[in-house]
Image (tube, rainbow, N blue to C red; front, side):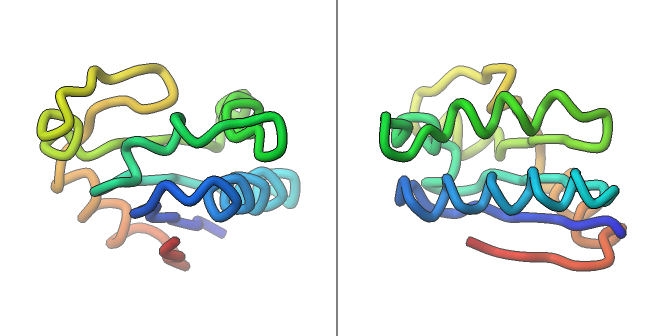
Length: 107
């Protein structure tokens, strides 16, 4: 199954659990794409000892069935550079994700 996940917020517990779900889905053999939009592009700032988002994101990206994309406009609005765990993408990429995935989840 192809799963698309859209993250729109920075709540550390929610983002951490989202990546945990994404990693679980990968372990089940699914393909998972994550798109960060709005505040979601700032998700890395919420990583902590209690909610180690960075660890989950790094584990996620180890799979060849995983992909993270981030809204370029949202990054620019926040004067934020793209990173390996937050690469710049476009609305065209978000549309493609929605169009090609079997399931879409939004957090």
